[in-house]
Length: 83
Image 1 (tube, rainbow, N blue to C red):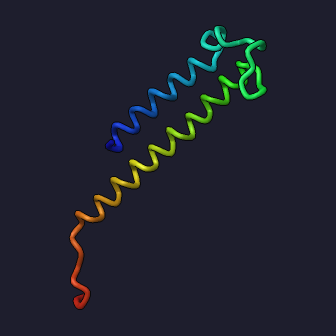
Image 2 (image 1 turned 180 degrees about the horizontal axis):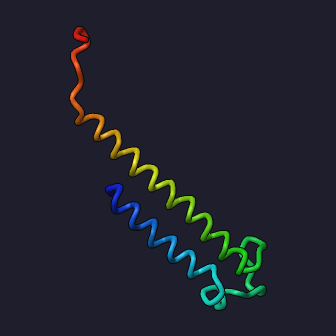
Image 3 (image 1 turned 60 degrees about the vertical axis):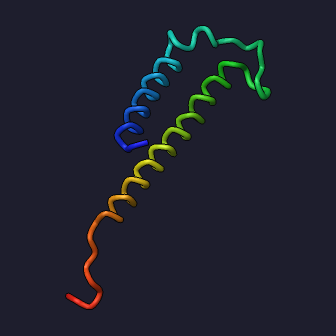
């Protein structure tokens, strides 16, 4: 995955996060009865989106680091004995 693609996916994720956690997007999941890991479903819904955000940012960091290392390998190096 390139850095450009990772950034686009992160922007799509942030748009989905905004819709899913704001007023109209959270209404179908605003329930107390089904509990997941001891939390009401709406709390689990919010926590899951935050956890996915951490994963998405980690993937972006991985893509950026990988591209920087590849660019470093392509960069010509100076001979060690010359100024």
